[in-house]
Length: 347
Ligand code: AOF
Ligand code: ZN
Image 1 (cartoon, rainbow, N blue to C red):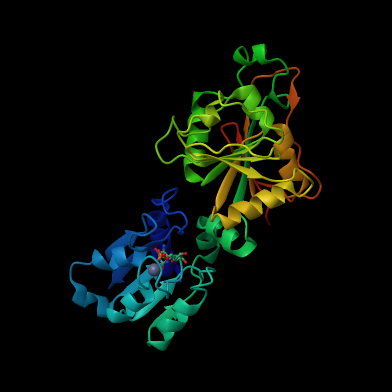
Image 2: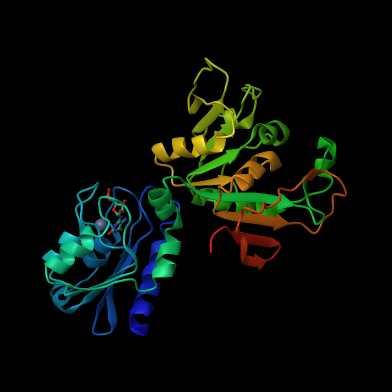
């Protein structure tokens, strides 16, 4: 029904305000509607703080209207005592007679139990309104809980003739592949993910900080591959400003403030093992920023969800080749504008 979709769209708008700050919790928005008017709304801002439904209900001035209202929420109301009490209980306590839900929560503590609680209490429950959009907004959360790994975003910038970097370091300053706007957007992208990963060559060649200094928002956890311990303490990723995890085969590396070494064998299962490790650590999303070799590993193992490719007008003539999608991948265009192509690896 179109009316339900309108209010669900508002839930999604509200939910998006939490992008980058709710980890490990999902993005959730909620509105309370009485006689065709929104009388309350809210969203989940941060893990440990009130859920969307709590904020929406609290914002209703005349609480007596709740008994005759409908509450909309893009994710099934929770049924468990986590960091906060169950939203389903609150809805029942306020005797809200109708609950419209965007999609079911796949977190094992909830997973249908919220809906069951509401129905048992006599609430009318309407399910799966704008389900596709509601699943999409929490693609990180659902990938983590359903696939037991982080949501994986590949990112690179390529020249018009298909190179991601010049061969010689010196030419780097003369021909730019990225510009001030793409850099800002990349920093925004970083602020939205929980972790960022690059390979050894990228650290040695570019000495990146992998932070969000051209944007506001939090810095992702830096994940670095350094098989044989080539990255010395002089590199920016060792600047102690943000948490950093370095995977290596070297033994007895010394951890320092904000910098932790993890031993792993660099065999064919490397990136799967890293994703398992990140899952255990509760990391729901990661952006892979190069170089070609590292990106190609993810592509060849078909272990990615989204690719964001910046395409420059400049040509390099020669250089390090861009990654190429393999036959295993299912890449399809989501967006193509302003020299940015976004691909999805799903149907
Ligand atoms: C909702 N509304 O706004 C959110 C929900 O530890 P807690 O108490 O914050 O619970 C976290 C879980 O609750 C999270 O994994 C997800 O299943 C659900 N999040 N649920 O009804 C919200 N953020
Ligand atoms: Zn809740």
